[in-house]
Length: 540
Ligand SMILES: O=P(O)(O)OC[C@H]1O[C@](O)(CO)[C@@H](O)[C@@H]1O
Image (cartoon, rainbow, N blue to C red; front, top):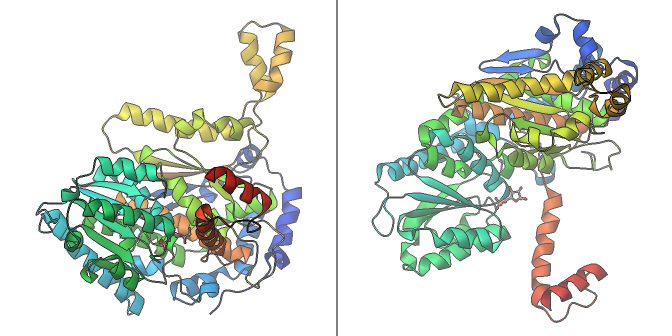
């Protein structure tokens, strides 16, 4: 089936939510005062995840209407359509089945079989590399892996390699994505071609940045050895097998990707080869199993206890009814440092759309701006704006009960900050409290009066607390899948296609055209006035 094509503004729940945004008491502290069961009602326990959404400007009536919005948008059918492989990516006529990549059931689906075959090929290769059976052209074992890719062929693998650094084996993994010559030339200076494996990841194998970087590496490699040795040190992950072979990579060294998996959702596929090479197949499969657990939770749980659904509805509440434009992601672990850049692509490339599924221009807000940094660094950077700025920024706080190190002092301090910040954002500091504090500093009435407005914190700033037992491959898998499904739910309700990215294609085409003009003599009237002048200035 196709996804339903309702205009969300015509749904009854949408108008109810508009009214509630004006009429309900949206003071979170009051909501707690009036309901001693609020935490129980506004939190979900799922395996090792505790999802607390009680610190939000959401009353029982609002929650009810948000859930109704999901029902009226026919979300249940949409989820079914996605998991059953219907061609819900209509503008590209494709299924959206990253969930098949982590389906460990006895499914008869052709796609699940294809995914399992590809995983088997990966497993063979990774085992050979780790056992030392796979030798480079110089008859040596692999010590370094370089992942060459961009966007989904880089951000997901890179984020997970970082996240699972604690679990890594002896292989060092590097990532080259930007076409900027600096990172690649600086990496090549210190790389040993005799012990390095190059993994070129490109679903299309036409991406300018990736091919440029791959060619530079190939040329560098050929200054050390001959072309027939490429097969020992280069592998590729792609759907475009012909282009990969033309590049000179042996067909045995090609790991297939599928057009039913979007680039930004592909880390679970062979695009995750660098992850598997870094942490080993056992942990890679644990990652997939974690994602599968979240898939089942998403597919089978009623919406009022369904973490991705609730998380999407909360986001829609702020984005569409309370005027928030962005949301912050604050993981309290440095291992998740790359989660935000990854989510920026996953969310903003998916839901940054202004035309609905009927092809009509949209007059309501869609994709939010996603940003963030790990706590506590974030606290010392931009939290001032969240606490006392003019913008309303709901934030996800991601914390872990147990650390991966033994230093409890550090972990307690870290987590004390995690708890304290959400509490401070909720409570703020009122006039009386500030006044009391200033009086203790024996300031004059006049001085107190002057300082007061600056020291008062309004509070009432919304946060979600996600408290997870420990950072493991499985919990990381669950976390990523949680956000993937959140993005899907938002797209369904906003009535947009979340799985194409035509906006990025234009930039790609133009970059190729401009590249010709950088060296061409004849650029008059080919560009706008500013671009033409800039091109001339660049050349001179
Ligand atoms: O894997 P490819 O085909 O090189 O594409 C890389 C990235 O480029 C995009 O098409 C646009 O940024 C992404 O969707 C994709 O992840």
